[in-house]
Image (tube, rainbow, N blue to C red):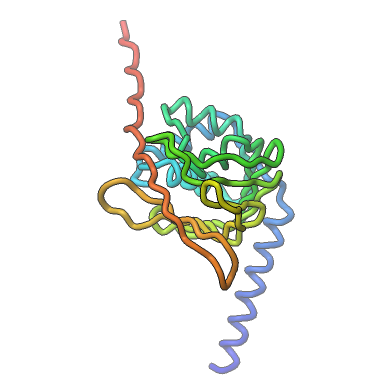
Length: 216
């Protein structure tokens, strides 16, 4: 029994290493506009589509472990579904992205150029803070829905309106079963950081599909 445990553990490690090597050697697949549109529609029909943050991260999770998503195609699919992705940090991350890449639990967003802009409340238009993005942004995606968390972030700094910018450490959804959903953002350093809450707008119900034409 004592020998069986190390042998089983070694087999598991070997299997994981083999799977990782296979994934690393597999060329990523670029999703088409039709595929992205289907992902958006499917996600809108679930609880995870109740705000822009959960919707977009849900689409990225459903897309697959080794895919590339053109930024224009994603924005067009969201627009076709009647979804205005203009909530604060979500708008900043998507508005300038030329492509989004997923490799396992790792995401990277390639922007047209580095940028700094205001984070605005979609409901009031008021400035909630500021965000700065490098040309390439990287992060890890863990959990799903209300338990989703983006961490191990590089290439993003955020701060309060009129204040200094600090490295973004993590983003997560706050459990808000009733009322307006809330995104929590933590920025700063290991021993000195602060968490700020950004309310998110609840998305409108998905558009109904047009009725099929009557047959003669």
